[in-house]
Image (cartoon, rainbow, N blue to C red):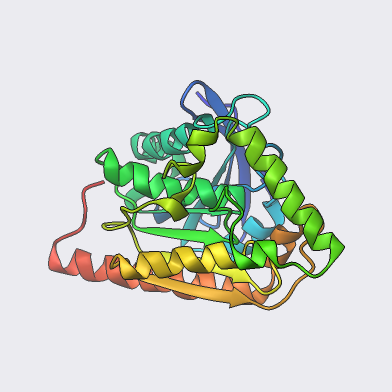
Amino acid sequence: MSEIIERGIAQPHQLKVRDTKVQGAEGSLAARIYSCVPVGSKQDSLIVFFHGGGFDTGDLNDADEFLNHLAMGNPDQLVLASSYTLATQKPFPAAVEDAYAVLTWVKKNKVRLGWSGKQLIVAGIEAGANLAAVCTLMARDRGGPDINGQILIMPMLDPGLTTCSMRAMPAPELVNVADACAAAYRGYLPNAADRIHPYASPLQSSRLKNLPPALILSAEDDPLRDEAEQYGTKLINAGVNTTVHRLPPAPLQEAGARNECACRGHALGAIGVFLGGLQQQQAEKSTSGTTSPS
């Protein structure tokens, strides 16, 4: 039985946050559940979220404020934030195998989570968005679990750091961001051959068909902007229902700044619209009797 610590947050929707454990590829992982429904009730939709930190740092606290806003603004969504093996402990593919293992675990533990199993969405920010994108590829290639949507917030998708927004940065602070990205990839992908593996660099994948609908959020003046938008274009060309939304400029040179940027109404509003669209699609499938098995 998972060890759970619950902390109620006084909010209009009575958000409750509880810390728990989930199963990764090689052991248990710290996780956190955000829910606006009474204990014992079930949500139809679950968002599994992976934090940022450049693959080598970061934890559940990094995106806590953002996920509080996300859960409060979308009270019909159950949100599970999961940790994963950092590159300082074990490099690629440990993190992506953890992320995929968490998705298979949630499908087997619906009752424990308070989830009906009807709709699964994977999401992440920065390095966590890389893992989220890769999980959709892995789920397709490995025959499940069924993923109904993906939300990629300012994702790291190009270990080669070849995009114009990454190479043409005017300020010394942004150059430091590029250097930090390069260092993160060196730790995550010490084997140079892995840098073109689609499970490390989904932007390099030539097989992007049959993936779930995607919302991709980039940000003006962000060195990661072009790779996010290029990935969106590739998904669209592969026939994937994809929305790409560029957020207003924000100071992104500080650690954790992407989480702060995501807390702004622009990001949360776009996510809310995307989630609403997925719910409508799910309702239409249920009405027609074609709901995917849970």
